Image 1 (cartoon, helix red, strand yellow):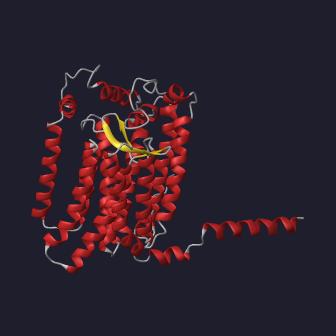
Image 2 (tube, helix red, strand yellow):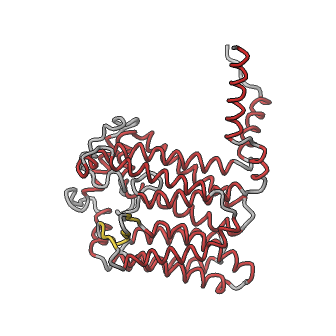
Image 3 (cartoon, one colour):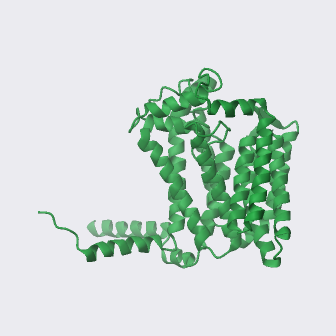
Length: 414
């Protein structure tokens, strides 16, 4: 005989969940749980998707995974440092950080540049190869938040607010386009749009800026025969699956073959040199093949949770700089994830952007974890959050207390 829960107990359960959601620490836990989960899932899938490629180029099935694990450690340290930075210090570093980032990005126009798959957006200094445009994303997000919020405090004229921020943004985007990386430039445009939207600029200004950016992207697509061919191929049902549509066709076949639960972790057939960039831009296809619809849905759910955490920070924090910076970072990370998944599912043309926190790639992983570390720091300074964290015993204190109790218990028994 089943006993139905009373209305009072249902109300109590709802009140508890509502209390958790309204907690001052909820944003922090949404962000850290979802981001770390995505990094761990990414490492597992990079190990699986890259094993064949690693054998081909280095003789060890773990080569690419080991590098990615090292990048994850560095990214974790960057995240830990960033989340402890005071907001005032982040504001003071905004201008210098962007100048340094633009300086690094300008090196793509020098002999230090590395040309990869049609793009010149990497540099090699000594034995280190990095993609400066990824770190410039972090710098630009912080710069936009700092400059726009500061100008809003001293001027009511939107021209005075927008000119310095959009001028530096155009300068940064120009260097990315100079490296022939239209996909990354589109992510920058999303970041700028996210910042301006939360800054609550008049819609005519927002629409004008968006129209100019859209016209620029369209022009860059039209003047490139390769880009136009990829765009047309995406929406052509008769596209040659052995030529322009080869990669996206193999990706769709991988997704479709996974079913509900997948063929099993490590059992992908597409990673055997059939699907190009299996561990990078098309890792979502391998997730769908090996982990099925449930695995792919988990990835989408984790990004939705990460986005929800960022939205909470935007809505709850009192500092306009924090709101605008977080909006730019959210537009970057969540927008890029949507683009990547859209490319794999043939909604968008192939534009060459990785799945944040999941795809192989050191610069992208470290920069994204650094950005999320900043948002975690913002979440820790939400109204009431400092007091809530101060009341929680630290992990060290908890560990010491548990060890002390265990030691005393053992001594009594002996």
